Image (cartoon, rainbow, N blue to C red):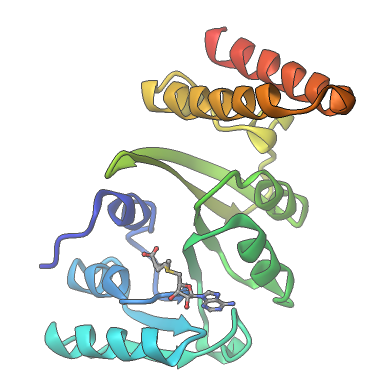
Length: 223
Ligand SMILES: C[S@@+](CC[C@H](N)C(=O)[O-])C[C@H]1O[C@@H](n2cnc3c(N)ncnc32)[C@H](O)[C@@H]1O
């Protein structure tokens, strides 16, 4: 059984046991898909990537671990995936949130997919807003630290439940008290403070916005 990094393990842990067919968009090495098949969490995976180089690495790993049910697909986002593949679970991880949003927005009938798991390299507020607007519910957030970097992974399911504005704009309440989330927010506050210090006096409005944003962030984690 392969051992995943803490970051990828947090993605794998959010995949339902009763999932059938998974599409891993931007699979790169396909290690996640190999792990999910080895652990019988899924029955089949479409490992997709936009670059041939990444898919070649995926193919080497699939062969090495002798996994039969992974199909590699050269694809920009969902473009070469067909409805008849009956994909019920999608993972997009290890990309920036603008790229993830672009990929999600370019898919028609996205809501035929039951579960979407997202792990972006930066603030995913726009992704949270988009997916909840089209009918997905944020069922779980998780935060992990891997090689000194913090990652938030989110599981979205297509159902009738509704998240609060707080959950859509920030995080689910269960994670709010996690010390790693406090650290995550404190990192954002420090970055904002650096920008505030360097901004010239004429950019007063931008400065004030950042100061107010930091005030809201501090209140949120100290409540
Ligand atoms: C940093 S890797 C992340 C790999 C893996 N998902 C992970 O979390 O470890 C990002 C991968 O996404 C692929 N990628 C970027 N844009 C893409 C797109 N529009 N469609 C499919 N794959 C894409 C890249 O080629 C690269 O292999």
